[in-house]
Length: 112
Length: 117
Image (spheres, rainbow over the protein chains, first blue to last red):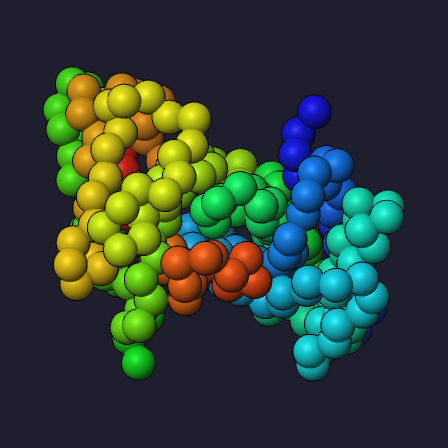
């Protein structure tokens, strides 16, 4: 079983709609959760971090964490064509060092 | 402020050769990690270094090695290159103390695209 799972997509949404990206992770002592955006041929860029259950909002982005369900999501409101990219879910587990485990990413396409 | 810088940006090598990739972290960051990303996959953890000590190692063969210098910059070395080593190699730094605040996100450089022919 993969440690961090994402639907590879592509997820297509019309411009202005809400894009919902989901991620599940395996049952281990999880610490911190991150969402990265990666444009084709570029390196990952940090969008959001979330550490406790509930919602965290930053501009058009909202991260949601439910540790009981081992689930983290990212909502993008008012989606723009410039949001078209691959979104990587990342998890840090305890272990004495900072190993970040990434999902395979979900490709988002925002249709003008 | 400068972000994480990596060099070179692109590299073409032949099988069996050796390669050295370099990384300079964000000023004030003592932790440097290396990741390998093949097309269509998420980044895979290779190493983490903190204050010149290896703190973690991923599931990669001994052909992969790294080190960190007193100025916190780092090198990743890969010996006896295989075709399967072709990937984007990402360096990331983070602000961590010795006890490792797990809330510290990784900040990535632009990566080195390695092609092995």
